[in-house]
Amino acid sequence: MTHIGSGERMIRVVTTMNDLNRFVFFVRNLYKTDPIFAPPIYAVLKKELKKQVLIEKKYTALLALDHDEVVGRILYTIAESKHEKKSIGYYSFFDVIENQEVAKALLDAMEMDLREQGIDYVEGTFSPYDPDTRRGILVQGFDRPHSFLTSYNYSYYGPFLEEHGYQKAFDTVTVEVEKTESNIPKLQLLERYFTSRHQDIRVDSINLKNIEKEIEDVHHVFSQATNEIIYQDAPSIEMIADVAKNMKMFLQPDLIKIAREVSTGEPVGFCLVIPDFNQVLQKTKGKILSIHMLRSKKIITRARGMLQYVVPKYQNTGLIAYIFKKIYDHFDELGITEFEAGTMMEENIKAMATFFKLDGKITKVYRLYGKEIST
Image (cartoon, rainbow, N blue to C red; front, side, top):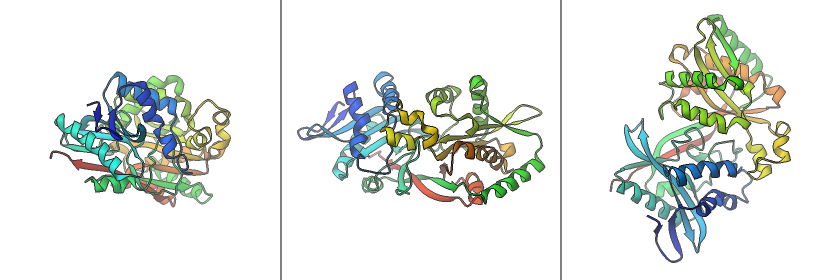
């Protein structure tokens, strides 16, 4: 499959760097008048997709063209689904102009290719090579800031998918918390509650100078926290190491905490919070080498909690709240006044509980849409 259709409108498979560039930069024009949208780091994204699409060819990228102008895109692959217990299609980077025919053409092309490979179900937006970022179609919270490494799209995306037979598979949510003086005594109370019952726990900032050992500990927590990781299996050590390498410039060690038993040294909890670099990328238009990036500490006032996991032994003990208190203690020095936790699976009430106690509110909903494509 190289082209589908002919004449004025067609679907093209990305096979060259020129087409990949058009795929990556399509959103620059699509969202150029949207005040909420924050661009990706184009250079990093192009490097990622070159590897996945052109070199390893694990993913297929499609462009929708109208008179040779890009009017839509989609990326997809086949991978094992923990939830479906079989190989399914996963799609991501679904972006289109406000034209249902364009959306239909892209989705039809993807579905036809997947059916030819024996796949009968497709779901997204979700990317197995990067499972914790850009997950889901935004269906609620279009007025809220577009946070670093989260999905953002126009409000017509969901209806377009639904008109093409896609239905809700899962929702993930974001809980936002404002940094207020009233939250300090609440967090102190939660801290006392936990430490009065568990004196054997210490919480450390991640040590980037000993990153290999830290990655092993993070992987241990992920692997043990099986009843919290409900969408996909825990990422491999290699995947965690790759993510850590790619994100190194964005990591703030004091916002990344590992909880360990003092007596055994065993890692039992992990929480990753990152500064919201989208506040910078909106100013740099997706570039990272600029005066704005160098001054990022003065620009960034928001933070996003990306990951929080606790091994079964310490689930429902208040450990997550204890870890978050240690992170919250650094917000003042970093100029952080707003925090969002997410994206969390909608059923994962335990993960949200701490933030609800701090008067947090669900402000965004991201939907994973699925479709049976066997016929």
